[in-house]
Image 1 (tube, rainbow, N blue to C red):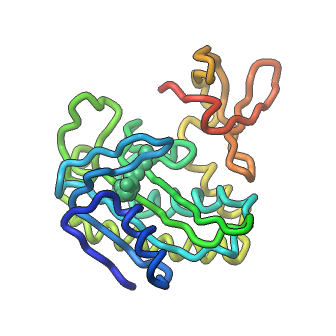
Image 2: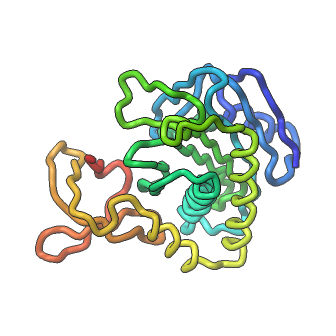
Amino acid sequence: MRIIKLDATNSTNTFLRQLSHTNKLDDYTVVVTNSQTQGRGQMGTVWENIPGKNLMFSVFKEVSFVAIDDHFYISIVVSLAINKALNTFGIPKTFIKWPNDILSDNKKICGVLIENVIKQGAIKETIIGIGLNVNQTSFDNLPRASSLKQITGLHYDKELVMLEIIKNLKDYFELLKQKNYNVLKTAYEANLFRKNKPSTFKNAEGSMFLGFIKGVSNSGKLQVLLEDNVVKEFDLKELELLY
Ligand code: BTN
């Protein structure tokens, strides 16, 4: 496995994507950095970092075995791989907040940015960017963020945590390649944050409503049980879970 270590870069996802344009990359080629100048989050957000404290890395994977309609299974694989690694390191009360944030003790400790390369209507490759808060201990103005160290009081070897996540990625991608969709979705839903709990959501118009998360559809929409026993499916732009 090739691991490219950079002291600083704009974004490990951007770096790996550009590298893939000029080089034929093997599966699980990794770019990891101590500092990002233009770290990117989901839906066009910025991913901030304190240099050296946290894990920021991206993984290349050829995924032409994943049908475009099943693209959410890549998110499922990644979420499960991170969640399992955190359990191995003894991080308590971890949950997957749909679609792929990882929380511990109700606080976000990890964010994921998956960028699929689609050609002629089919997914060819994916770049999986993972930002895991490891040894950072203060989160000014971010009351919903935390880190492994803040939760357990222990200092972690970032590389060991990264290698554990990559090992799990290999195992879960193998399950996906063998089309174990039910196993993967069941495991994902078993770890879903606020599943079957009364939760407040905000819709795209800003109105609040109450519902119960029941699961996810194959296309990755969140299934929420609403009043009158109706289950409605939402995509990322259509609702926000308030917690
Ligand atoms: C999010 O929760 O919004 C996703 C954050 C993803 C951050 C990681 S850090 C490594 C990789 N490079 C990036 O620019 N983003 C991802």
